[in-house]
Amino acid sequence: MDALTHASHRGRAPHIRLVEVGPRDGLQNEKSALPLEAKVAFVDALSETGVPEIETGAFVSAKAVPQMSDSLRVFQRIRRRPGVIYSALVPNERGLDEAVKAKADKIAVFTAASETFNRKNTNAGIQESLERFKPVVSRAKSLRMPVRGYISTAFVCPFEGAISPSKVVSLGLELLALGVDELAIGDTIGRAAPKDVRALLKPLLKEIPEKRLYFHFHDTYGLAIANLLTAYEEFNATGFDASAGGLGGCPFAPGAAGNVATEDAAFALEASGAKVDLDFGKLNAAENAIAPHLGHPFPARLAKVAARAAA
Amino acid sequence: MDALTHASHRGRAPHIRLVEVGPRDGLQNEKSALPLEAKVAFVDALSETGVPEIETGAFVSAKAVPQMSDSLRVFQRIRRRPGVIYSALVPNERGLDEAVKAKADKIAVFTAASETFNRKNTNAGIQESLERFKPVVSRAKSLRMPVRGYISTAFVCPFEGAISPSKVVSLGLELLALGVDELAIGDTIGRAAPKDVRALLKPLLKEIPEKRLYFHFHDTYGLAIANLLTAYEEFNATGFDASAGGLGGCPFAPGAAGNVATEDAAFALEASGAKVDLDFGKLNAAENAIAPHLGHPFPARLAKVAARAAA
Image (cartoon, rainbow over all chains, first blue to last red):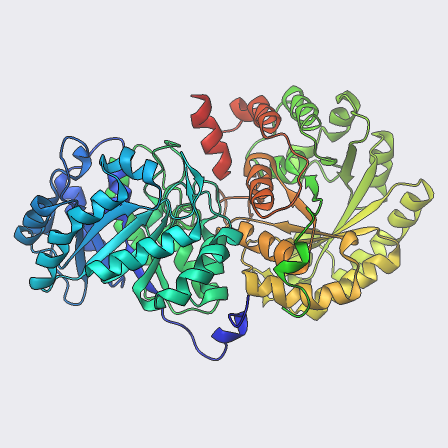
């Protein structure tokens, strides 16, 4: 635990930087694409909840990810709320062209800490990914678009097993050196436990400032909230990705729980003394905008409490 | 954190004392009673999973809790596996008579840390409950039946709000003084966060030996695993109640997640370095024995991974 103890939060309420990834990481993992209208209504309702940033879509191959094929139209039809950042995932320069056309406020590039995972996911090795990002990042910078860099499988890879923390730290430093502004450190398959969070965050936070980091936990095995609170309570981490209702999933466990749910994350952080800008009722309204189009209930624990309270 | 740090677990794998409460605390919260055959098959299958103790039924008012009205027949028909403890909840001397007739190995009495909750739940004040337990506990002792004492709403009460840790500590000591062998400390409505676990466990473990304690978390708000790992990692707690599939619920949030799921708890504890006697495949088989009789899926995160793996 070193100098990082629970005591360090005492006396003030740390402000959480929450990124809502439901419209992208969430809906991308739904079996079928949602109607454009529902996506627009979802993003518009999410922008009323108080979250400062919404990952709104992705400019990726429509063949590989049909769920995101109408991202341009989503961006064109949403009602932009001043102060909210609407971001887009882009894999390459063509994706950046689309993001610019869509007037995305920010882009995100993605690679993985596991060579095997990255090859299976993007058909490229990690170094090859970084080469591909260079022109994307430099053009984004010249357009004054901030850039996020995702590092998937930062704890455990479904093919390679445990990932060495030093690998993640050096990859993170490489991304920052390329001009990436912030990193999203992903537990893609939800296999990390608090001890793994400690093993990575200890060296990571020695090299990279906390404000440049976001932690992206998945709840596949029920450990997301424990991991998130470990990052918050023991390391003062305040940047977290979350998905409304817990939308999303894990390609290696279809149907299982997905991203940590925005409401569960916010509840746990507030119950632990943090300040989270989130109106739970408005989040529930946003979920209601897409609920009829999903073939399943929301995995969020709080969504169930809310649903019953309303009934 | 004091002397209780993560380091204290290093170098050995602490052995978890898991109590499976699905057949009682789980099924008691189902909308309708399960068929006797299904209950017997469930308990028999659970006794194959490796868990050392199964709370098998309750000898309470059949009018108040119809789901448990056939507990005597469940006890009479199960196949007792040597080494497994089959326990029963009893509210009074009449309940103890039934438990003796059922050849229960152990009994559990129950009260709450919140006066209001106890009155609403049992129609008696806390002190009145303790008076009622006296003859039950003393007769159980003379019959060499171990006695568990439940303390509900040990963290937060739906009526009184936050419960003072000192109240729980003194009630625990009173129960032990009565002859109760062990305590189950319940977060009945699932509102505790890790900071509340720390606030109670610090004084509690100063007064009561760890081996006499079991922690009984509910996942209503998604905090059960974080709470359980806080108890394990920071306080070396090893006694936990859990319910197969996450069966159970919270009377104040019907339909919401219930007890922490046995598989999720075991997975989280093993991923954190503990030794848990649980065969996940056999637990899944036990769940399959009752799945057709439930009107809903299992809330457990791992049950979803398992269901999809099998499909």
